Amino acid sequence: MSEKAIYPGTFDPTTYGHLDIIKRAREIFPEVIVAVADNHQKQPVFSCKERVAMLKQVTKGMPGVSVCSFNGLVVDLAHKHKVNVLIRGVRMFSDFEYEFTMALSNRKLASDVETIFLMPTESFSYISSRLLREAAALGADLSAFMPPVLEKALKAKVGHRRR
Image (cartoon, rainbow, N blue to C red; front, side):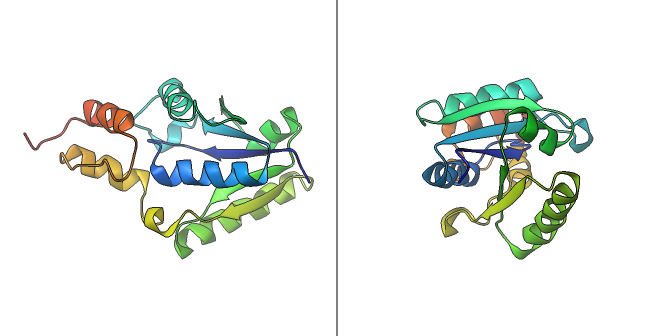
């Protein structure tokens, strides 16, 4: 079995669902590299540097977890770190369809890199970063969905209309 796995994503922002996947991956692999995609096409709210810093902050107490950024192909990152396993979180069937396509594409690009799908606990399965960004803009209490420090940063970034 591989000693390391990479959990790539945008993490804009990181949610309790993301953190749950990181913890689950750590139960399987001694080392998990959380790789923040520097993909401007997704038009993230937070810069890549901010997302990396926030992830480092909320994973600080998790042994075996490191955070980095990347641009380009995740399979190239995997080869660079000598990792042959990618972790992907799947919440709903609609996620699986997209992730399945990505896994097959990655397998075609690098047959030595395997994708493992992990599901978050049921209480986090409906959380999405996109919905949290929208709710933050409306001033919703997001404490059940993300760490308070990240909620504060998100609300400061998107501003909220409810005063």
